[in-house]
Amino acid sequence: MHALRAAAAGRTASPSTARLINDRIALQLLQSEGPLTAGQLTSLTGLSRPTVADLVDRLQAAGLIAVVGESGARRRGPNAKLYGIVADRAHLVGLDLRAHSVTVAVADLLGRVCAERTVPIGPDDPPGRAVATALAALDAALGAAGAGRPQAIAVGAPGLVDPATGRFGGTDWIPAWHAALVGALQDRTAAPVLLENEVNLAALAEQRDGAATDRDTFVLLWLGHGTGAAVVLDGRLRRGASGGTGEIGFLPVPGTDGLPTAGGCDGGFHSLAGSAAICALAAAHGLRPGPLAPGAAPDAGADTDADAPPAESVVRAAVAAGGGGDAFLDALAARIALGVAAVCAVLDPGCVVLGGEIGRSGGDALATRVAGHLARISPLATEVRAGTVGGRAVLHGAVLAATDAAQNELFAPAR
Image 1 (cartoon, helix red, strand yellow):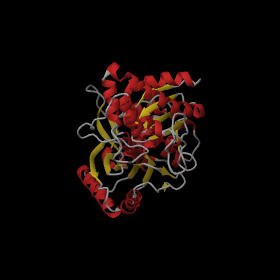
Image 2 (image 1 turned 180 degrees about the horizontal axis):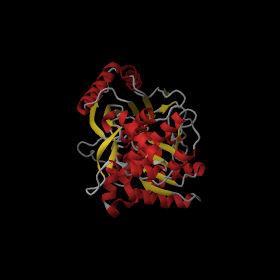
Image 3 (image 1 turned 60 degrees about the vertical axis):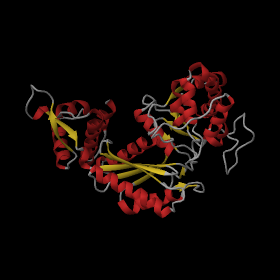
């Protein structure tokens, strides 16, 4: 709140720019704190009462805020009015693209999901049919939410996203319909379309609403069908020059039969901690994978192979087995710790969150073991946490990113 007061009171700006800055500060407070009275806005922003009264009038006239109640049963009059953001002033869309499915979520201006649709994409569907299927799901979700043109769209997908262009980079192994759909969304909706690597969006979800809410520097290690990582330093997501920050599957590590190549991550960390490797390790310990729970879907990750073994069920079974699964979990944790140690040696993030289907299934039992192995091979104090957002982290992150984009467009001061 001190930073908000400083921004409101201490920044030199023209009168029109100052008004826009003050409006944005008030809107941010109404989003984070919920409905507030004019008096509370005065106290939290450090602005004068006349200034707050003016900004309340402006925001009401713009349709961005409205009176949503009163602050108490015993209070009446203008000072008791509670003002809140008009959440249905605009809608936004988050999409989670998989190799063989797409999930669409439509949310209001506060990021609350109003409607959602998931549709399968056939493995032999041509790109045009896949795009048409995805657009039909978008239309259905928008219709169910009673929404028109979205204010912003965020898309989470596997693969590299070039930070300079916002487009896919190195798309040889990305389903062709992914790029085609992003283009179709841009042409059809006229709304800003943000494309982001799925693991980066999962990290955003953990940072805002999950295991890293108290950290401005951390690494999300994604353990799913494949492996990946997202790096957040000083509160900012770091993508790298080509969008390749976090391609940890290519990391050379001991314990594999070879080295990765520019064309594939076999021989890298992926060969120790990918789904197939985990299932092989489980088999060596006498554990066998079972089917996913009814209605469950594998999480996103660096590998989009829909036929990857269900390592999630093996890890979950090992945790449930108590002592019977300890040897397997310990061996898996030792493998994961190799990748974590390499990341820590370069970045020293202080905190690593285990996400993806394996991180979620292993929970604290796996995270504690990884921390123990890590402490023996790394001199850097690093906390290892299990991710808490769950299996919808990518979609949740996409909604958050779209919410930010929509609010920036509607709330941002003029530049």
